[in-house]
Length: 394
Image (cartoon, rainbow, N blue to C red; front, side, top):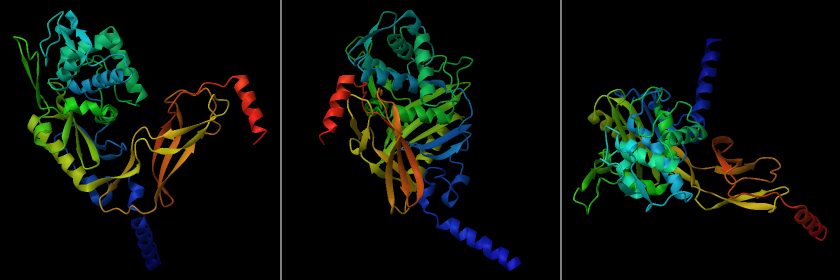
């Protein structure tokens, strides 16, 4: 009997080890070879390492603990600025006037004076490099009308992104009761910000000047020293208050792999930078990105019932890839487009309409949401009549 039990256990273990490595790419990519036992950020209260493209978590430690985020808050401020630039609400050259409220902010600042004007681009530099609390509030008032209204926009965006560990009270991260986030949520909003590829032109700068031609030039030096000292690092945001300690959401890219590392509650800047570098080293040494669909490539057609267009082509609005351990087999990787049953107009641009599901063999590796690339209005009765009539002759 004992021999039979031993044989069964050995057989079960062999079957487990025979599973394709890609099958673990989404659920637990950090676990093969005992990686989950490694604490890559021993000094941090909370940490996470994430693949920026797929959102796959490589390593995490207390990643959902609600903690004060300090100036990492400004990632959400920058995200809303980038979205406003994309939709044409503002332009980089627009002038932003500093209010008394914005000028009164303490802590890290670019020393804006009441009534002083800077362009949106200069304000972005002031936020991204110098962590300007005053610049953050000035931009919040520009976009929201009031700081409070902008904060409501921040919380609404957090809700849309599924950031369930987060509540914002201000746009800059100055200490206040009820203002908190988590390493996981910070990685999520960092990933969203990085979809605006132009942001790293600012977050990846090491130094620049504001008021360069004035009699009061202001030298900006990036508070994130990794952009200078770690190969491939080009963002994103540091943070420090006596309550939050030293925090950092950093990103780096090598070859076709971009990763995000977040640490919160580090005791010193040295340990913060050392541990983020260690997380980066681990990610780049152990993992690779395997491309599935390139940005702009067709992933299929969607049939729309009772719409002004009867079908639309779905083009990838981003590149889709999966994270694999280096050396993993890439054989038998494929994807399927699964759309919702009976898509019916009206449909709004950005509305979820299905999934792109990646398989390796028979096992699902990853699924991505697919959204409508354009709005489809409901067809008029005349349009439907003509369509029906033309169908009679085909």
